[in-house]
Length: 426
Image 1 (cartoon, rainbow, N blue to C red):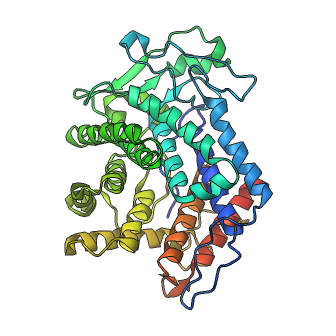
Image 2: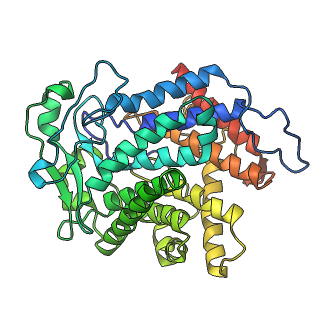
Image 3: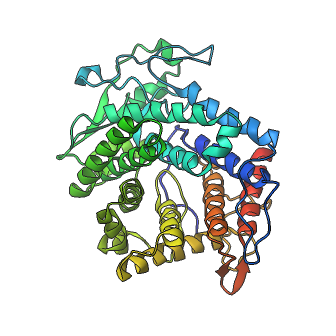
């Protein structure tokens, strides 16, 4: 893991890292929420849970993080719990006969950037799927589901036909010249789209990942909505894969704010989530076949972020390798092993005492990749580490190997906790 080479936005803070903070808070809470009946295992200890005693500081931090979504909501607010927020952007998309009033604002501005917003929805879904029981204990599951649906409602409306996806609301140049509360906006709210003549593979694929992962969240509580999410996810993946071109090339103006450095990671990320949501083998073949070999960057650990999802896809597909190998072909098994091997390399890079530990960290141990939105990388890394440690514990995998040294799930959990504590003290 070297330093990041991502281009950074000018004057624009990415709000998506807040949910990664929430994810890490949940992860840290998992460390401290113990089942009193847990027993040791001779090979590896069991995964903590179901929830027992609550560590209040983590519960409070999670509540603050999930409340952030209510602050950022656009549209006609329902059961508004933020007294200083009101309805806003009710006519967004109206000039194109689409309702884009929902969704969430990017930061302190009034822009809606779908690329990072969709990634936020994907990670929020993953957080709920992995740690929903812990979130429920501290009464944050329902607020998180509500915020997720607020985004996915918007993303569905942003996709009015199979090969058209609206990806942005507002003029960022004009918006950043006039900071104001969204309730007071009077300027024009142009919308931007990708289509067959101006494709945007990464934003379409990320939206597919968001809707596919969310379909799993809502599968048992709203099956009709889950099916609708999955329908749009499948169409968007087909669009993204059929018309391959970076949205940064099709729409150069996005380069100033959320420039993409490539779309291969989003294709693998989306296919991974669609496989989990549908169990359709074509998606597994996609990630383990020629596209996986082309885009997987196997053996080379990367940073997990709104621009690069490879590490996330590698950890997510490790789940299949850990728990679902029995009925796979040899090629599929080999491909999944490559994802898991690379995910393990990611973990080895994060562990501070590992021979392959990244040097991208502060003297105090906080992962430090870039000055712009500096906390997104340590929190994202902490989230992946805690998820991977849970996969190890659940599968009774005792250790990983980093250049001849052995590390346990507890080492990964300690790393994750250290990042949360470093964030709190930074």
